[in-house]
Length: 432
Image (cartoon, rainbow, N blue to C red; front, side, top):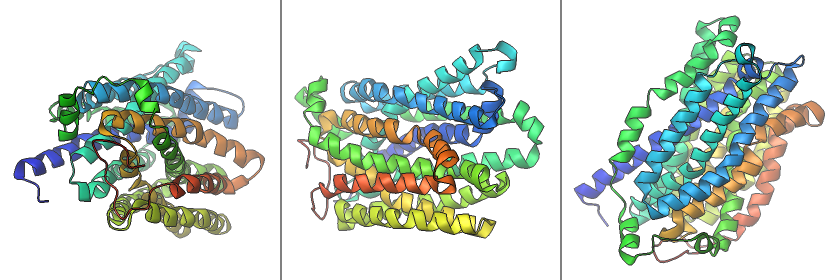
């Protein structure tokens, strides 16, 4: 069905509002990982640089513990008070957490209170992020025509790719313009401060967004006062969502966000090479997200996702082997682009698949809980786990091994998806 002019305008505004906040969230997470060695030295000083880095990544992971709490609180808020109110709140909370990290005094200035401030900033970001995915995915899906919801939801992961590009570009710029001493002293703060500049625009876009027709219909039926029991009564969707989110989170954190750090720490490649390859790879990621969404709309989610997961199982170890045996820049670009293509082909369609598992009255809560429970356990601590595995057992192959294990588990969840040619979220109930 052709959209009216008003519907097209609402659709574009929904994409802008959801994407800008989601990009801001992932930008903050990306630059924390990219500048983790400098954060580690300033806030977790130790005689062993590896211990410093692991501690910084543990704090990064601890922030994810707040995500399930945020998923429950903010997800239910989105299902009761409205999508735009929840998205505006998540954006403001994310900005507060970023500001805490950007302006925190170092350990040398205030001692043990310094890492506590970083931890509180990460917890605030984590709580906010717990409601971001569910709210943003719901807004994108509910404001799109049913036959194009896969492609519309692809903006969620594509906006993450754009934020990774900006984060990697900031990393490249900072390393190109400043000395190592300057970066370690104050230069690592600049990317965080830069991210805060977008806050006024993001809050305005979200605050002025009109509620979707799906949510307005739920309000008219009086079903917005949902309980957690109603959310957990959708347990088949929650389980499928958990499995899908597991590989979604791991492939992004292990093969996209953490790779620039890994190739420097494990393979001795330069920061400039790592960030440049990351920028190129994330362009591929953004493009492949839209390919993924369109394929899912045309072929069906189960078929498209099964093919992609099998490609990850085979491709991740093979490409890692190529990079380990040929650690040069052209190979790094090829490998990073392939990793990002695999990540995008899966994660582009993932938000629409998750939305499809829940009725509108609990959609934001269902997406938030299933996604964040999986990401907290398996993706949030991925940098710390991979760093530990690299130093103990698997060496440079650790990211690929970890990703392949997650992909094997996720196949079970994807196999349980209904096999319809097209799957679109319904107001009345889950299609699962």
